[in-house]
Image (tube, rainbow, N blue to C red; front, side, top):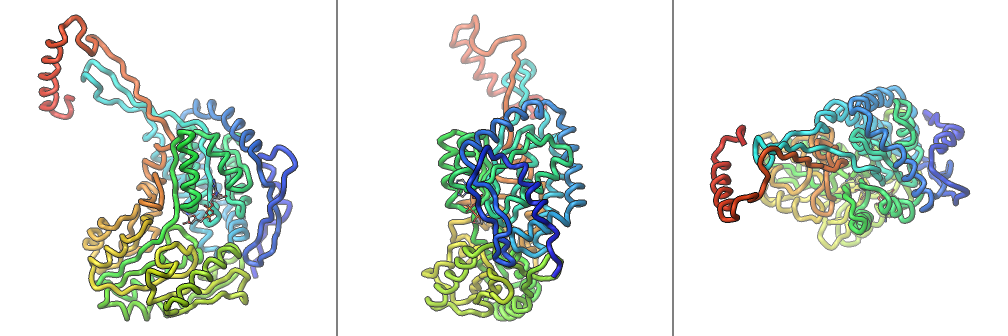
Length: 518
Ligand code: NAD
């Protein structure tokens, strides 16, 4: 087995960047490939959060004063630094998550694309903009984009490179400082991703990291920052939103999903089956945008099912720090138990296992076979609850109307995938699906990797968007400065009734003027 090169000394040196203000209780960190606790992190406290936000705040003003092009240059260098240091980043991400190297590499690619996109497009988006103003020609109105201040990030364990830094990059570019609370399980991956940013030229104080639990460190962070970007479960997201509401700060919430995949009657069933493999089993199903529900037109159902089951059976599971295995481990015993619970409940209530359906302790302690079920009905937990594991359900449907209706019959609305022989038809169907992103003839990467387009959830899948213009501007306060020249706005020396008449005529005239004159 190709061994992880990350030694104890390296882990310890990464932890030096943590904000911990005294002796702290330790939390074990488990390597999912073996199930062994290989190191530990300090459990931060409210005082640590206070110290981290204080340091970030102190560094933020001079950072915001630097020209945006200088900030963008650091992002550009970061993209190169991540590519050059990818081996260690992949090693440490695999060590803490148990994912395959291929899945870990998708994270590297995401960070690089996001950094390059915002370095390139960000400066223009942040420029102050002239507007036509109250009285064209007499009111000079300008919109400025000011940083929020200190942006807080709370991230999950499933994509610890991407979800710890990719969202923070536009916040930094906009002139904010960052305080991150990474998932307890994957703190070292986040610390290395941050270290590379410092290597690329980011002043270290601008990016603070506090390790510890969500209930304590995460909750306190929401109370202290000027903006919070949360990625994780819908349940925890609600509690973050409540706290953010009380603190009257803005937030974005990237939450869970129960994502549908539609195979239309004109799709090539074999091609769709290969696509569905990529949609269902990346990171052993522990990807917020991976598919768990498949609606297949009856006319192609059997061909699709047979091809999909055969492809699923061929997936090879494996541990190790080299490229090769198709699917890695679940991240923890808790993830394994939840997956087992969902499958057992479904089988007891009449579901049929077409392939998989059992843990694989012979490969690793938390491995579970990629599993395809049919005859799944509403009383089963996994019918509408997110499993977040390698378990999916097949449903035959009579036509495209039924496919769309059933895809939309969910409290979630994160991502969807549509397979068809006619791309135009696919686009029209996609527009009727209640999800923040929809991929036509692709699993999830087409929409996700369109980093210049917004990405996020509807319904219980969240609030706000990452990527695109929204993914940068959300870290800013829009400020409007209006300078009035010549006449004042209001009746002045005129009687009120004369002013009211004048303004009525002026409003009608204004509407008739061509846009460029207004
Ligand atoms: P989780 O909600 O348990 O934890 C996520 C983070 O929030 C962790 O850092 C945790 O310590 C912290 N946290 C937990 N409770 C908190 C609280 N009350 N206040 C503040 N912080 C708190 O989620 P998880 O199990 O780590 O991740 C899996 C979930 O995340 C799945 O539901 C998945 O769909 C979702 N997810 C969504 C996206 C997305 O972009 N929409 C991406 C990845 C994962």
